[in-house]
Image 1 (cartoon, rainbow, N blue to C red):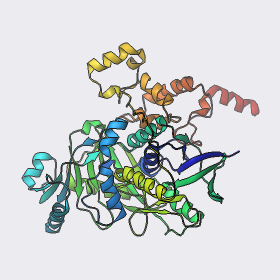
Image 2: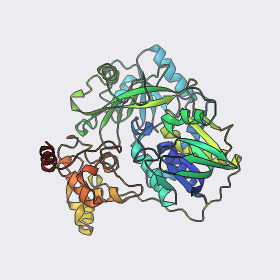
Image 3: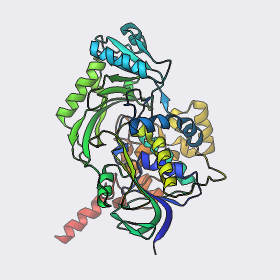
Image 4: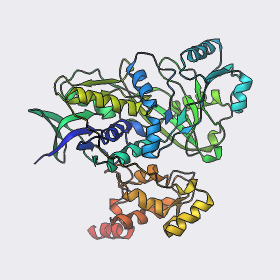
Length: 484
């Protein structure tokens, strides 16, 4: 017998989880299906994590409309989800007269009265490590940075607290229409819903095409990044942008909420599943970062990585109701500023669902999410208080990020829970520091095995085919010897 829902969301990225959180405010039975073992494992996982003010967006585009609508949601996000972007401000840097003309156009269309064009001297007061070649900068004091995963997780937690179900390892194979219901097929089981939202990121276009709707083919563009150790904290305090080119906002330098420095991304045509880094791509990022900050300390790099942008020919979001399946809504080409726009996209999807006949009756009460304490960020008084409440707060599991056993236990038991080592890393930053797991991974596996009551061969790094171990060494060696 098929499980029946009012709304099924396909895709657990930042947009899918934002939609889940939005719908959790209403008296609905909602399910989110994600093919991976966790939220935020695709496009949302690897991006710059910036809450844009949106001055650069073309007026009249879907991107521009939904981005502007999303900004008004962040006070509600802070209140209901206990999630707080780090407001840093941003400088867009001009190196010549053409660049300066662009800054003047930003000033003209900017939505904030306190944004302004600064001289080189004023710019270097704010950012002493800025290039001496700077002609001027456009200062936007409202830009902010977030952890893309933690924002996605906050949406997911808020949705789960208010009744949304999450099913992982559930790859959607297709849709069928039976009367007024849509049947969603997965390898595990089939589901039935009156409404389905296709927010499948890089797979959204193929899913739309498979359902019979005509959508332009999607192009994938890779962006590569350098992540510096926290020793670099203070190198820049604000987001530094170059003047954008015809295809992207360019290679930027930015602080992260955790205290690292991020440089990237470039813009390189790629395959949808190619997240490799290349010497050529990294050299391009290196040159772009050094143009903004000539003394950029690449010797402090602790991680390099790449993400993929799902790009349509029009370079705009494509959000529409299926012509073949009433009640099916497709979200395609959600690239930058999709992270910032996610709550605005969720609200727009709600409007489309209402147009298709869904009744959105608000719940009498909403449960607010309370963020779990981060031991690393607590002062000594708060740390002593936590340890007095639970000795697990005093057991350090990860030295670089000062992650405690209490945080590991929380991450494994929250909803949705971590079920992989990468899931732990993204929730509580264990293995994310300078040593990149050289210390923690000596003992973290045994902790996770004991807490989840699983065998060593069941420990996964990221997906279901990423087993960290095949078994205990002596047992494997003895079994091999016996067989021969």
